[in-house]
Amino acid sequence: MCLLYTLISCIAGNAQDKIFVRYTELKDPKPVNTASWSNLPSETMVSFADVDTRYSKVNAPAISNLQLQWNTSAWKGEKVHTQFLIWTTKSLKKVSINKTPLTDDKGHVIPGENITTGFVRYVLTDGLNKQGSGCGIPSRNEMDSSLVEDVIDFANEASLAANTTQPVWISVRVPRSTEAGAYKGSLSVSIDGKKYPLSYSIEVKTNVLPEPKDWKFHLDLWQNPYSIARVYNVKPWSQEHFKAMQPYIKMLADAGQKAITVSMVYDPWRGQTQDIYGAMIQWIKKKDGTWQYDFSIFDKWVSYMMAHGIDKIINCYSMIPWNNKFYYYDEAYGKDTVVEAKPGTPGYAAHWRPMLTAFVKHLKEKGLFNKTSIAMDERALEDMQQTIALIKSVDKDFKISLAGSYHVAIEKDIYDYCIASAENFDKSVMERRLKAGLPTTYYTCCVEAYPNTFTFSPPAESAWLAWYAANKKFNGYLRWAYNCWNEEPLTDTRFRSWSAGDTYLVYPGPRTSIRFERLIEGIQDYEKIQTLQSAFQQSNQQDKLNQLQLVLSAFEISALKEQAAGDMLKKAKTALDGLE
Image (cartoon, rainbow, N blue to C red; front, side, top):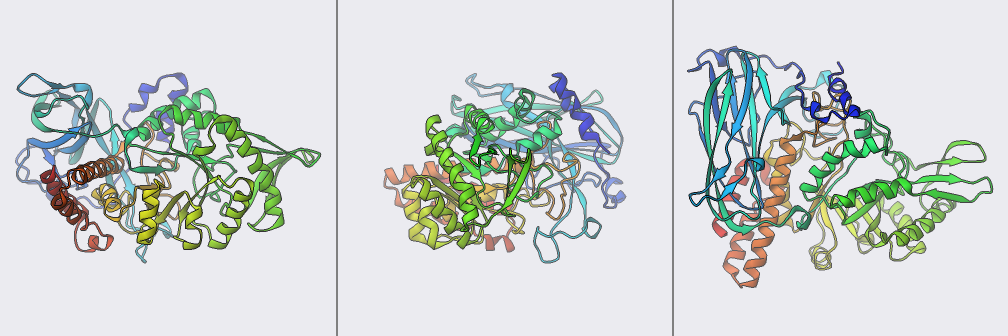
């Protein structure tokens, strides 16, 4: 099945609107509970539903009391969301959503353009291995696979088969200029000509959330431009490629992304993705043995990202690729060539010193040196020490990034340091780094059963991640894959030996996801926490600082063994509202 490519092939013809065409979801491998559909009070039902729950597509939801009203609150500049469900025992040919602007009793308006609704699509997922990890998944036929809701598809209308549940996502972005007050609006679900009314209200607070580019949270989701080139069938770094990337980079910027992912060598991660990362710097060994470096792709990519407001740091991977192999074009042989060299060896230094020297010169000419960091991930301490020594011998002011284990011996050499969620910095080290304004973050990957962003993870865990950062004093979070798509990303989120959803957070289309929207929700909460903490400190409200810290202290990974992330978030958000 190649539905994805049929869907997207029209992009080259400047018909980008057609990528919102509906596509066929896979069949749920789980058996249908036919009894769940037998006693519904009506053939078709509509109700708001718990945003922390992923509802089955083929089983009727256990909702006895229909919820026709959604009430929430928001800061100015905040995006809030929920979902409602449509479930039916008969086939529906045409389902569409109409919405009204939100207004208060003084005539102030949150315009309709700030309100979006999207049909939530189902994807195939799996689970953890027998050891409770998302790494090293056995063959797929050994896994307990099922369909889960995740893709948010902003199509104009949908059709439903009989005995189907269709979630709909509603999102409201409150303009920063909005007057505080109570705003009310309505939705009308049109189903084959019949209207189903819903209403919603937002209490807009006086507090103002900064714009995403000014958020303090250091978000680092690794981008893969080569995945976009493959899915859209365009030549990498062509005008068509940059055009195809634009909505995805905007989505990322709107989430407060701070880092640019650069692959300065070919395949830094040993082919662990469907689309191998190409070298954004071209390495050419001349016939006389000297080196020439072409930085033109690097320059285009970096300037493109910066034009979208993603400009805090340029992380260049990697001087220690996972196979220690380095590819270049050799003029003497007239072909691409590979050399294998380990950090600390003469061959390694001979390969890297000329490049680093040329790179420093180029970066300083472009005014990018202070924003650029040589980045490594999950590398051994000895290799890191050898590589750091080489980098610093070329220019002592070169920034270095590491996503990996916490090593006391090299901590002071690392500008952007990201450790695994199971680890902690020494308290004094954390305080010193934060005072110096250094990116000091944590990450999750396939190792962590929870919290995580797999497609089978509880949706609230994506928001929980930022609350954990606030509790532990991290100033951000890293996830290795924003868009490393597999062959059929719209229908099957499983990939090789990683748990489903590990390799991407957004979908082709462009389509966002429940996981990505919940991650943004948590980051907004983090910004609220920072704003309130600063205000309490300035006004010397120690009692409120103590109350806030008590709320945050609940966010320990071990607590997720006993309490659901959604329950923890509901309680904490209520407490946070009471402190405003």
